[in-house]
Length: 406
Image (cartoon, rainbow, N blue to C red; front, top):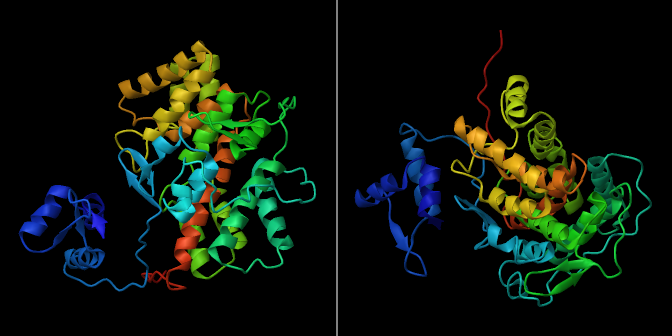
């Protein structure tokens, strides 16, 4: 069943038009269990959509993807019923991953403090990684982890999630140490707002690999970034993972499909470009940085989003954490960039700008945003992989429109 916003989106109409269809008898709405919302049958919506295409039936075997993992709303992604913006500052990334994988029933819901189904957030004992870039090291981890797994074809959900947790932890372990290497107190971990301590949390280990000063505030900010970037519905890399799952590829190969797609400069790499924008603004001022970037790139990295036309709620959460870490002058500069862009009707800033600002303030390398994005997205990819295993295999088959050349 679809909520009204999603049904309207699939039909390409406004919600008011959707309910006009109901009044004309073209669709039937059903009461939601809580009684306040109205729901629509997916099959009814798809049939009406086909009728709306000039009355023609479209020949296709391309699947319609229905997911219970993440819903995109004007207030950001919602992970199985809970806004990611709430989880970012109230739950550890590991708990959020369990929510994505197992649903709200996992440990009573993220943030409950009870044992979770996935306890294997410990790195694999692999050989030292070669001297590669961070993104190549993370791909190397997946290849090596799969090569060492003698039962990599075991697709039981509990085994798939164990693989995901260990791969994510090993990705962090394989990253190079910053220079100078940080001094980490014994037992350092992630302290959540409710006072619970999570020793050896992934966010603490990742912060130590990216920043020479991984203090408590930075660990909390990295955790929030991991949570916010964990999933984003059917993003391009997620679709690649689902296609791999549809062929019943093992989880390692499916993760490699996601990583291959993420390697493209148009997906996952925008925070690095936004990082460069911030460096230019620090040296030459906000006006010069924006003008030069528009002159040479035509667009502003870190601004605008295909989904969030009125603003990215994830940006707001990470910006507040950046403000708690950065010097006042740097905070003022980021605000000046955002204000100047708004004056010229440039779309609102997105999470990539906030991710870049956080990395910039913490002395992280320029590609730290991509690193955080990659580690985080292992959680979402795995959730969609598990969901796709419940569908019929080989269901992704689009039909081409053949156009003879010459």
